[in-house]
Structures are given as structure tokens and as C-alpha cells.
Image 1: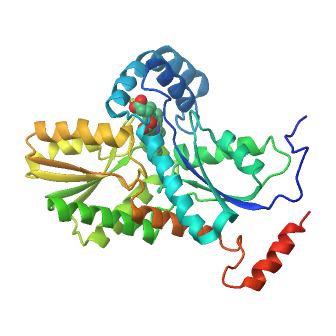
Image 2: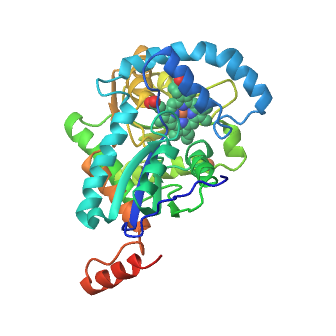
Image 3: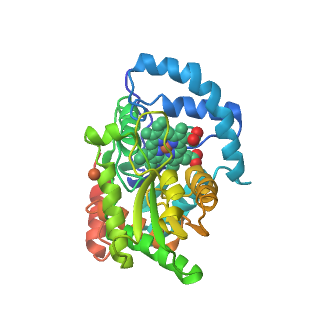
Length: 360
Ligand SMILES: C=CC1=C(C)c2cc3[nH]c(cc4nc(cc5[nH]c(cc1n2)c(C)c5CCC(=O)O)C(CCC(=O)O)=C4C)c(C)c3C=C
Ligand SMILES: [Fe+2]
Ligand SMILES: [Fe+2]
């Protein structure tokens, strides 16, 4: 059979709206073999590493997958929790909080689930569960505020690859970006303000985003511009002047130039420029993960303090903070326009339910 179908379709099953949160994915365990599996899938994605395939195959299999898994496993071990990888734990908590928040508004007409682009809890697996559960309208919200090919672009590829094998496709809406959504900016500002109320402010606020190769920007990827726009809006919301904040890019991989300024180089140079205290926030990460907890929380702290800095504070990601769940709820509700019965109008709801039930 060329296309997967549903042989036993149940006409009495109520049609539902599905909301699928996605994030990058994480290894199953902080061990070399699990890291090898995860990195192989992740780094084989041509959206992530845009290098001629044959050349990359030899570099990946000949060098990277022999060296990196052990090194990364050690880093993951330092942040791993009893419940698992922080990225997975935090994404699950976000999905549960969003389920409660949307459930209060829409009852069981909306189903919330979460999936990962690489590794376990795959997009294909969760799509199958949603569609089998009666979802006919699907909203996919990749938890990447700023659009980039390696993240949101690749997530769309995974959806499309699954749909290519299906007979009956759901109606689909896809949130490619929300880097300037007022509720997201407000949640970020709220988080920085709460931190400052507790700890006071610092000489500089560093806004650190995951990097991508400079080449991607040169070839039209909007990520760099969207990061700067988020920074600008967040600074405005906080009343910060130019010079009181900086945008920089972390997690460089490989030898070619990535987006600059680099977070680590910046932090190493700040003390010599008279900056004694910094607060670092990572607005591009919806959930704390290896790249924030270890790289920003530990590694870069060390660079700053060793270079003569006196006070370094990492402001956690939005995770499942109420303001973040409120922002995600608003983003989802805006996207669901026209997909749900109007609750205020009981008659319209009943009429619509009859119509929905009679669509096949
Ligand atoms: C090799 C190229 C990479 C590109 C391009 C890239 C873009 C990119 N990544 C994120 C978000 C995350 N990346 C994470 C981990 C991670 N990223 C890369 C490489 C690239 N990322 C690697 C090899 C790794 C694995 C860790 C390691 O071995 O160093 C994570 C954390 C995952 C976790 O399990 O905690 C996130 C999140 C974005 C947003 C992005 C482009 C905009
Ligand atoms: Fe990454
Ligand atoms: Fe730009």
C-alpha cells in the first residue's frame, strides 16, 4: 500500500483540534552510545549541516561521531535530572500546563501533545497518536521563537515527510516564528524584572542566542534579524538604553564563521572594558537544556570570572512560568481562529456540532 490509511474509520468519533508542541530533542541517556545515536540523526539533517552530502558523510562518520559522543555525554551528565534530560522534562511540563490552560477554555475539543524533532517521542509517533485520536485540524507550534532553517524549517520537513505517506491529511497550521509577539516579549521582560527585583541589576544584560553559520544569514535565513528584533523589543520593554544590553550568539560548532559576536569571546572581553557584573538571558530557548544550563550556566560563567568579572548571573528560560504559558495560550488561540465553535453562542455551538458530525 502506497499511502497509510484508516481501514476502520469511526464516523461517530468527534473531530478534534490538535495542538502539537515540538522542540529539538535530546539523547535518551547521558551515555556515549545514546549520544552517538542522537547526534547521528541530528547532524545528518541537511537543514542543520549544509555541506555537500558525501563530504559530510565522511567527516561525520570518520571524525565527529568518534569524538563528540563521549565529550557531549559528559556535559549532559552534569545537567541530567532524575526525571531525565532537562529539555524533555521542561517541554513535558510546558505541554501539561498548556493542556490545562487550553482545557479551561475549550474543554476536550482541543488535544495538546508534544514531540521532538530528533530522538525519542518523534513527530511521526505523536502525529499518529493525534490523528488516531480524532484530530482533523492540527496546529504545530515549534518552540523556537525565532525562525531558522535548522529548527522550524526542519520541523516542517519532518511533518511533510510523514504526510507524504498518508492518505488523509489533517488541516494544518504551522507557527514558523513568534519572535516579536507582544505576549512572548512581555513574558521575557517579566522574567528579567523578577530576577532584578530579587538580585538587583547588573552592568550589562547579555541576550545570548544559539548561533548558526554566518553563511545561512548571507543566503537569506531571517534568524539573525529576528534575534535582534527580539532583543530590541525586550530592551524597550525593560527601558534599557543602548549600551546597557548586548546581543550575542553561542554554541558554535565546526570551523566556519558563525553569527557574531560570540557569547564566550564577548564574556571574556567584558571585564577589560570595565564591565564587572552581567546577567545573561537566553530568549531563543523556550526551555532550559544543555546549551543554557551547562554552556551558559557553568562554562561561560567561568570565562567571565576568570577574565576578572565579579558577578555573573544566569536568568533561567521561560520554561513553564505562568507568563510563558499565558503567552503560548494566546499564540495558540490566535492561530485557532475559526477552528472552534463560538462558546459565547450556545445555539451556534450546537448547530456547528451537528454540522461537524455530518461532514462525512
Ligand atoms: C551543527 C550545527 C548546529 C546548528 C546549525 C544548530 C542550530 C540550532 N540549535 C538550536 C537549539 C539547540 N541545540 C542544542 C544542542 C546542539 N546543537 C548542536 C549543533 C547545531 N545546532 C549540537 C551538536 C547539539 C548537541 C549538544 C552537543 O553535542 O553539543 C540544544 C540542546 C539539546 C538538549 O538535549 O539539551 C538546543 C535546544 C537552535 C535554536 C538552533 C538554530 C537557531
Ligand atoms: Fe543546536
Ligand atoms: Fe540581520
